[in-house]
Length: 52
Image 1: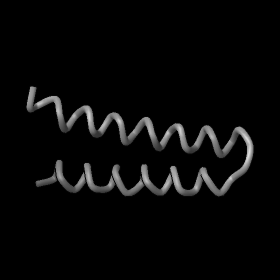
Image 2: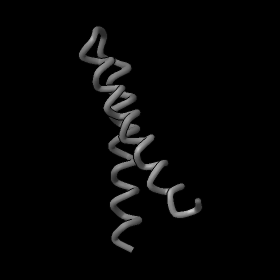
Image 3: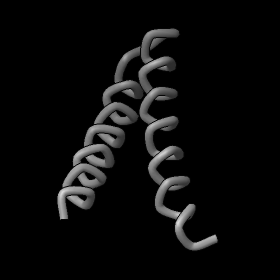
Image 4: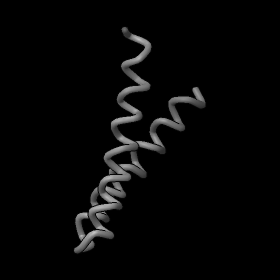
């Protein structure tokens, strides 16, 4: 149960980082979006790892 809550919080924070990074121009915004994307991909990897 606690895993689902953590995954949900990480997902919400990651999407927030991508959206917030899109509003900031320059390399700082790009870096923020890349951090959010990395978190989303890591979460997707962890989810799919148990089904391999």
